[in-house]
View 1 (spheres, rainbow, N blue to C red):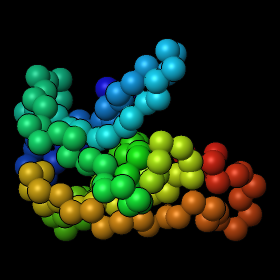
View 2 (cartoon, rainbow, N blue to C red):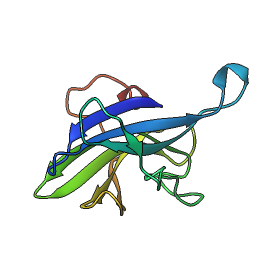
View 3 (cartoon, rainbow, N blue to C red):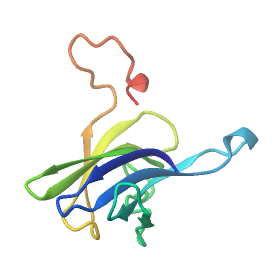
Length: 132
């Protein structure tokens, strides 16, 4: 588990969104990243993993999220939860930002890329790869 994001849902439940890594980079394997979540009644747990993890899983070969799904964060607006996350069609950059939605934390709809690689704000001096 890596890169946790913790928040309280409108119904009072606590949601811990996290990135799951698979692989051993130190021994020549690459990390393969997808996103899961766990739920609890209390901030301090115990947390129960969602049975459908990874709830944000890789898309089909060639899709915007076929190789990496990572770095999730959540915003609620009028009862809909918007889940932003970093994606790549491979396990390498260029990184982009995508969004998915849910209202029940059981079903999720991927809406696609919202910030493409290489799009920097006016006056920004960093490179697109540094934006991840």
